Each structure stands twice: as structure tokens, then as C-alpha cells.
Length: 281
Length: 169
Image (spheres, chains in turn green, cyan):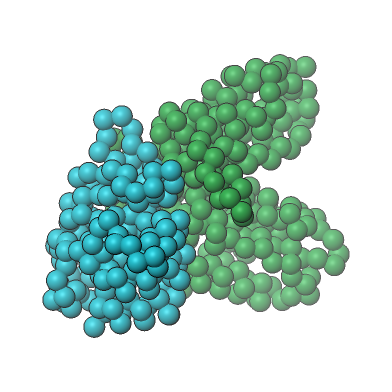
């Protein structure tokens, strides 16, 4: 067995949360830089130029990329021969979210009660933690600071397995295009297909952590990703919905087995401030 | 794309010369208000209490800043999704509000209300907090500090970049 101390995990997590709050995924930035150089659309160039400038200034001026510094989301892969000493992973994540909130500082954006009280927890706890058990002794943490705007425009559909592929693509693209500027495009689009009701949502979230623009190993899904990306970018909504050809930076699909009666599809949107990192302890 | 440098309070003729898609560099004193602050402002209006600032002379910015780091003028600044305030906008327009800053599309109803009141809706870019922070001269909590990011903050702007989304006739 391998033993890891709760304090050591918390320290690494806090550091990661602070780091991503000031630094967007470099591949996302690179895509926007290329589009900025190639665009002939005046407003799109203006908007992309401001986003690129922001990515440079955030680190220099020590100002988070976005005022919505997000909710901490962690997808953990935990080796079955690993023991965490001193606290549960949920407790560790909550402490790290709170520590980072005070230290950076980040905006307190978590409401303690979702419906009746809407009272701010004041320190960004609790975090959202998903744990998957894997072989071995390692602890891998996929960490994101997820903003509310793009999360609010995300959606889930329980389709009939007989739905034609063209219809599926159209429905996905239509919902994304309708979200306009609210999800803060250019977007990264995470699509979870299969599993069941809750599982496809988790797959969609996890798809956002994939290396930006990676090719899906299955040729059918790879083609689907490319087609959806191309359809979204033909809509003309553009960066921040101000027009142009760059509404989405990438589309990532993750899929899983599902019930013969079901075709669950979830789409999780990520704004252009793509704040995530993987760490391994 | 035409660029206008404007200072609050705006005159009717300042607003009339704006076209949708124009860029505005906005200066002057503004107040932030999100969902919770809107509800509280509307409660005051309904009670007939004078608001502590003149809506006609300022702008409402749909923004919940992040806390300031030590020695900074402000934290992270940026617009939140405006559509959440669609149903809460009319009472403020009726009190004279002329300038709104936010992000994204408005409902058809809200768009009509903004036009009818000769107001202008400006959209700022989301997720460019460090760029916007450089245009903030001061930022202080003004009302309802207990609401945290949802409190009303008073800000002085120096050429905050935004774009004309909806403009009244």
C-alpha cells in the first residue's frame, strides 16, 4: 500500500487552483491566436485581441482571468492500493477551494443552499468531487475552475436510439448556437454519449479535460467531433457572439455503453477561459 | 467600426449617435448590480424610497467583482449574463436609467423596454478581467456588503471597452 497525507494533497490542490485561475489552457490560447491572425472580421479581431491580451495581463497584473473565478471541480483517479491519511478527498478539496479563495484571492461564488436561502458559503466550498477507482498506487486529479455562464448553457437529452445521426448533430448544434454569447465563446464543447442519465453528464464534463483538439481514437467519433465543430463554426456567432468564424475551439466526445432503450447525450460547455490542469501525486 | 469615447452622465444626443456594433470606451461613475441587488433596488423603488444614487446619471453594470488582492485597485471585473436581469430591468428604466452594461442577448420584451426608454445596452467581453481591471480607477463596496460579490459596488471607469448591443431611438 501507498500512504498519502491529506495536507500534501491539499497543498498541491490549492496551488493548482490558484495557477489555473490566472492561466488559460495554452492550446486554447494558441487556437485563438491563430484565428486572430487569420480573421478578416473586424469585431472578431477586436474581441479575440482583447482575450489574448487578457491572457498576458492576468499573470502580470495578478488579476484572475475572469471575475467568475468558478466552482472547483475535481475528477479523481485513485489507485486501489492508495490510502489517504487524515481526511476524505471531499474534505481535502473543500479545504483547498477555501484556501485558494482566500489566498489568490478568488470570488466566493458558491451558494450554500440552492433554492431557499441562496446564502454564499463565503469561501468557495464545497468543491464538486468525482472519484474513480483505478489499478495501482497513483492519485491523478483533473482540476477545473468552472464558471457559471457556460455551465448554465449546458444540457442533457435522453434521445431515442432510432434518432438519425443528422438529427442528433442538428439538435446539439442548435442548442449551442442558441446559447449565443451567454456561454462566453469561443467554446470548448464536451459531449458525453451513452452511459445513463447521470453518467453522460459526467462524461461530458470529463471530455473538457481531454487535450484540446486531440483526435478521437475511434474514427466514427473522430468524424462526429469534426462535423459538429465545423457546423458550430459555420453559424457565424463567433467570439462572444459578436460574429465571425470561431464559435468553438474544439469538440471532444467521450462515449460509453448504454441501455438498449436509451441514447443519453449530454453537452457541457466551457468558456474561452479554459481553466483546468491535471496533476499526479 | 466606429469608436466613441463617452463620459457619464450621457446626454440624449450621446446615445442617439450610437449604432449597434459600435465600440464605446466608457468613463465615469457606475454602480454594479446583479440578481440580488436588483431585487433590493426594486424593493426600495416600490416603497417609494429615493435610491442613494441617481440612475439617470450613471450606468448599471451587471458585475460581481472578485475580492481585491492587497495593494490592488480592484479584483477581477467583468460582465455577467444579462438575461437573468431581463425581468428586473423595467423598474430601473422607469427611474431614469439610461446605460446598462452586461453580457449577451436580452429578451425581446426587455429589448423593447430599453429602446422605448431611450437607453443604451452595452455588452462587455466576458473573461477579460485583467484587461478591464486596467480601466478601473476605483472600486468600493457601496450597498449591502453582506451580499459579497452580489453587493452594489461603486466604480470609477477610465475608458472601459464595450460594444453597443441595443440602443433606443
